[in-house]
Image (cartoon, rainbow, N blue to C red; front, top):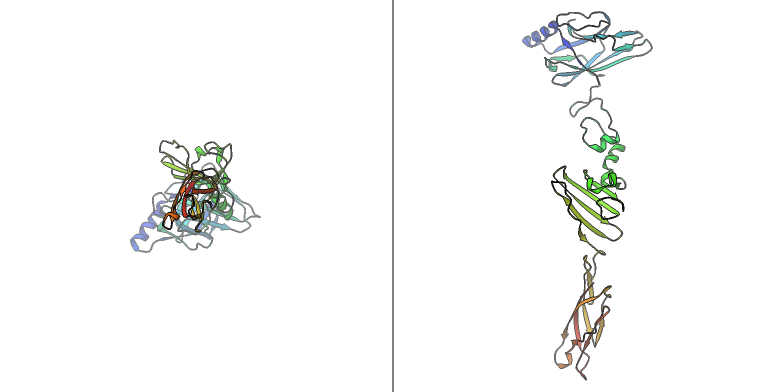
Length: 349
């Protein structure tokens, strides 16, 4: 939106001073004049150089301490060029003037309506010193405190997240949140290089992604650019998770395993087991005679087994005989004694 550094006339400044002294302020801007004069404005002037049109359909609002937003409408069939304009008070005083020394900067055709919306910078007075008769069609630039017109952000601006003056549509908001996996699938690692990620988000790594252990889902957490970051990598095919961090110097640590193997599987039966995330399997139970099957077979190997006698007397005595394997625990007992009963504890993987 164009911004015009207008010249406040001596007469206009005097009217503001008088209004402040008499308590009749703020000064009311009632009309806008257009003309064809092309010159450097003079604070001493009291009229436009070559006025051709005077309009009372003017609206304005203060959008900053030193800026007013002015809108002018002309729906007549007149045609004219504009090289200068002036703001007039309700007393007929030329309050401020602008002229383009190079000539015409706008034209109105007979078949068209004129809607001129401009921001006027008042370098030496407060915008609060002025008022307008109406603001119904002012259409000022919107802000956190002013209702008005706002530009929509495109996808790149929405994803950058640094623009404080544009608004997002549902489509650009979804695109901006896409890197967090919200509303859609995780996006590919930009540049296929996990080492260069600088925005927190959820990404998809491929076998060719630099810095990633392999194909999978990569979650990047940026603490502050140039300070530190952390990444989690999930191998959804093997249920594995790795992590690493980046220091202030920009150096990434080696990937460290957080969890490997299947999710923890447990049976709390009398003869039960627990499969830990690191692959260790713990099994327990009650056996009788000279052998008992484990609740589940150890996929790789039995690492340790221990038994404890149940009951009392010589007939309860038994011991491990070194023949236990990945599927069962075996014991021996003295010749001729009755069948022993015992509990076992075994570790394996």
